[in-house]
Amino acid sequence: MENTNSKILLSICIPTYNRAHVLKDTIEHIVQDPAFDKEVELIISDNNSDDETQSVVESFMSTYSNIYYYKNEIDIGNRNFQQVLSYGKGEYLKLLNDYTYFGKGKLFFMKQAVREYQNSHASLFFFNKVKKKYRTEELLECNSLDEFIQRVSYTVTWISNFGCWRSDFERMEQKDRYVSYLLQQEEWIYKIVSCKKKAIIFPFQYLASEVMAGKSRGGYNYFKVHIENYYKIMLDFVRNGYLSEKVYKEDRRYTLWRFKRRFFRYLIYPNKRYLFDTEKSYEILWYYYREFPEFYLVLFMMGVLFIVKSPYKLLKYLLNKG
Figure 1: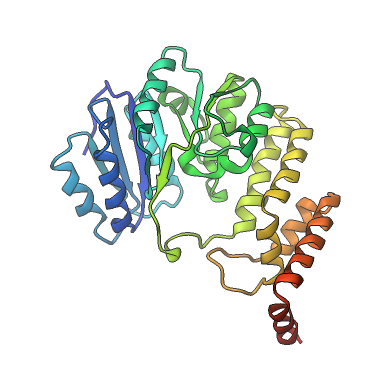
Figure 2 (figure 1 turned 90 degrees about the vertical axis):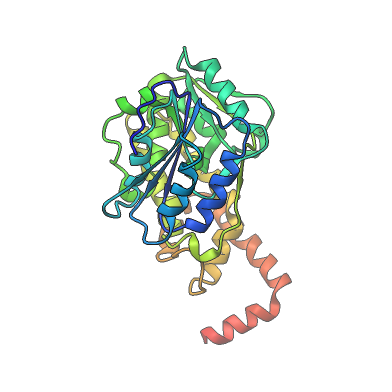
């Protein structure tokens, strides 16, 4: 269904694929919000699902005229992110996972913020999570990409943290440059911040998530996407002069400490079945962290902790290796 309404304030854009049962709950939460009114549209871009996704969405469309459904003729992978955003007619485009909805009062708050800044079109972001020390009830102002990354770090990788003015998105060139990296939204954010210099972040816990079965998530290579691809994109902005080498290095140190338990678990048990592919974990971690003394300290600390807490598991592991 085509959306011809040009007076929309906010477009909620959800890409989805074969998650009809999850999507149904998500839509129910969104439409029951009192702030979901004629100023808001909900757009679903179905990546050629073969489950009940279409019938689920259409059951809501019969009641809500501001819900729009599009189905791709073929599976276009992560290009569905930009596809769903391209359908939006609102002043501000908000990308959401199909298992994510707004907390109580947060959709109203987001509309108020969009209305407040719609004339200036200042770079505006709603981040469900930022670095812990910046999680406040006050907005964060950043005057450079350096300051932006220092506050949000790897949280740019979550698609539900992406949003921008429709005019900014339409002007953006080569939107699919990093589609194979599974992190094209990271580059989009960096481009917007680099272009406008100043960015405003609302660092509030404004989203909630449905509980999903583990098999419905993951499947990609965790280290390749969240370490290798993440830093390859960031390094491009260093080389082009938008980001300092210092902040790039600081962020690598931050992610090392932030994910130390996960890193160690994957290193100790590389053949264990995870929700994510862990192929070449050693090589990726070594390449990005070998220059940091903290890397070896983390390995030592986690090793001691593992031995103290799980001597039986360690013995069993060593025996099996032998």
